[in-house]
Amino acid sequence: MKTLAAVVIEPGKPIEIEELTLEKPGPNEVLIQYLYGGLCHSDVHISIGDTIARLPMVLGHEGAGIIQEVGPGVTRVKPGDHVVCSFTPTCGRCKYCATGRSSVCDMNAAMLDGHLEGPRWPISGPRGTYGAMCTLGTFSQYNVINQYSVIKVDDDIPLDKAVLVGCGVPTGWGSAVYAAETKPGDVVAIFGIGGIGINAVQGAKHAGAQHIIAIDPLKNKRDKAIELGATLAFETAAEAKTAIDDLTNGQGGDSAIITTDLITDQQVSDGLSMIGRCGVMVLTALNRIDEVTVKVPSTEMSYFRKTIKGSLFGDCNPAYDIPKLIRMYVDGKLELDGLITNEYSLDQVNEGYADLLAGKNIRGIIKHQH
Image (cartoon, rainbow, N blue to C red):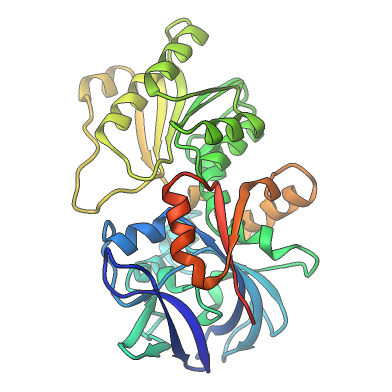
């Protein structure tokens, strides 16, 4: 079948809309009609070349839609089911899934090549076979993806809100709740209040943090952080450190979570300076894979038992946490509606990313036309 999709052809060039051809779903695969896709900074990393991926690639790794067809062996969903996609699949069989670390499932190895098991590339077009970002390619009207990447949701859940629970919400929320292990009374600093950082704010509030300090150069981002639970918000890390020292009598905070567009040496240094003894710094943001951005003062790390942790998908388990976060939204305990700043059509994808880079959006979404 035919589908329109937003494709990266060459790093640094505008994203192009192409008509592509999809094969029928094979074993453990499903055909999904995407209704919505979320605009995340990770797509930008691929489109400008910060992250090296197999090109051409259909962008989009945050998606929600309706299952149209299933291949042999599919047991998780059936045609007509409404689903949210997880950018990290969970096979349930590998070492990491079996030991409660499903956010780093073995199937993630195909994230940047964009192929299904086999390997198999079910998308083709004028440039040969096409990869799908995180094997999802949600900036396509339709796609063939693995059943282990979809989570069924109730039909009455609005998919334009639920789409955010496929990446930005669990990545940020889990960075505070699971990776930083935030506890009641904690002091938490969060660098960068975009689609991930704002949910780290929500996660820290949910976990009972006493002081949540948001750091972002843009006033609209700081205002949104205060609206959703931050107790203080600052333009610079220096201002935030002064506040944390005042709040803790110089003892330092409990955690610092970096959710900026690109991690820098300075952010790492600032984060380490803000946390006290036994403090945790969580690195959720990305950078160019060939750049070293973490320089560690080893004596300080040892004497004060400080920890630096990397986190993917907020250390969440998609099969458990996506339904949990949806329930929290339904119960009024998690904000989703207010996170969506703008909605775009597929052919406005470049405009959407320009707005993201200009700091206009907390989260923008693509609405597919069918």
